[in-house]
Length: 186
Image 1 (tube, one colour):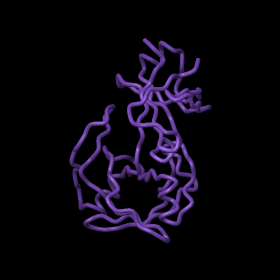
Image 2: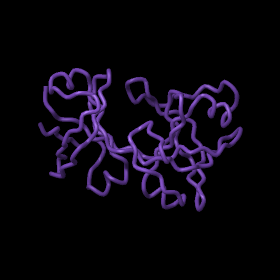
Image 3: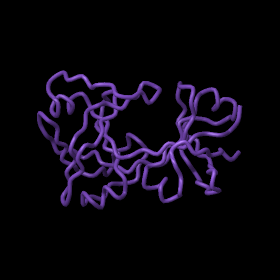
Image 4: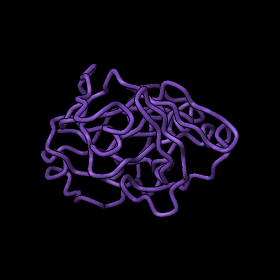
C-alpha cells in the first residue's frame, strides 16, 4: 500500500438540511441521485440559485444526502461575485458563515451557510491504519508537480478510496487537474 492519493477538485456546491430542502423543493422532497461520490454521498440532479448582496450564482449543484445543517461551499471567486466574505472553514464549522439567499423552484430562504472549504484529505481506514495517520491529524502533501501543501486536515472514512479535496480555484491556480496524484509526506 502506497502513500499516494488522488486529487479531486470540487466546484461550488451545497449540502441541504431536510428542513431547507422542504422549503426550496417542496414538502418531503427526495433528491434525485445523478452520480455516486462514495461513502454515501452523491451528486443530485437538483440545483439552487445562490444570491448575495452584489451577485447571483445559478445552477449550484446540491450534494446529498440531506444533512442536519445547510452548508454552501463556495470558491473565493464566487465570494467576489456574490459580494460576501465567506470564511475559510473546515466542513460543518459555520462560525461566521456568509449570509446567502438560497432560491429553489418552490421557495427561498436567507441563511448564514456560506464558507470556503479548507483543503482536506479523505483517507480510507485501511490507508489510515497502514500509515499511522489519525482522524483530524494534519499532514503535508506533495503534488505531482512538486507543490507542497502543509498542515492539510485528514478525515478518515469507511470507503476504499483516498483522495485530497481542493477547491477548483486552488487546483487551477496550482496547475493541477482532477485525477492528478499527490503523496502524503511522512
